[in-house]
Structures are given as C-alpha cells and as structure tokens.
Image (cartoon, helix red, strand yellow):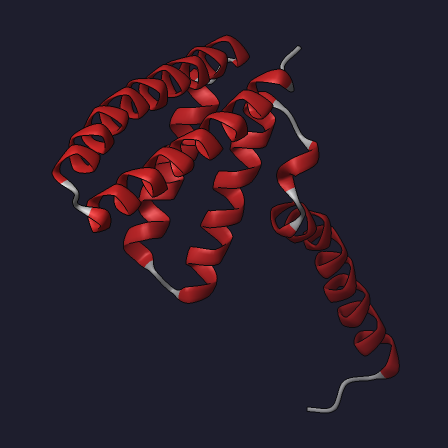
Length: 140
C-alpha cells in the first residue's frame, strides 16, 4: 500500500522527533566527562563505558556497568569520593616506600634490571599521586 503524502509526513515527523529526543542522551554519554566534578563525573564516566559496551554488544559488561551506575547513583557522595581519593593517595605513598626499599636492595645487589624496574614503579606511583591530588583539588 502506498502512503499518501500526509501519512508520510506524520510518520517522518514522529520519527524525526524521536531521533531529536535521543540525540542529547547519546551526546551526553559520548561527551567528555572531564569538565564535570564529583559524582556527576563518576556517573558520566560509567555511562560512557556503558554506551561503549552496548555498541560492542558485550552483554555481561553492560549488566555489570548498569549495576555499577545504579549503585553509584544510590550511594555516591562527593565526601565519599574525596575519602576514596585520599585513601588511594596514601596507598600509593606506601607503595613508594616499599619500592624504595626494594630499589635500595637491588642497588646493593648490583642488579641493574631490578633497579630500572623499581625506578619505573616509583615514577608510576608519583604520577599516580599527582593525578589523584589533581582530582582531589577539583573538590575545593
């Protein structure tokens, strides 16, 4: 059956309106979350990962991310995020202390490959601390 011009216009208009309503949702999910703070940023990052998993058809990951997003929306507070970041910073500092002890031992034993390994780990942890401290500073 051929559609009359009026039927086609109504169907096209409804479909175009539907796409228009979906556009902001997909734009938000694919947008950069870096300009958001706290829980809003966390939600955005999970939503971005969720959309990627959906696009790839990874049902298991989609389910896990949906649960993570629900949990985050239910329990996330800026204060809890600050505490998490502070804990992560302390853990990284503790790791550095351990790596420095391992580095000293490797230097004493003359193991150049181990020396490079622990120097690299110390650099990684220092970079991690700077990144976490930067994130933490965005709460102020």
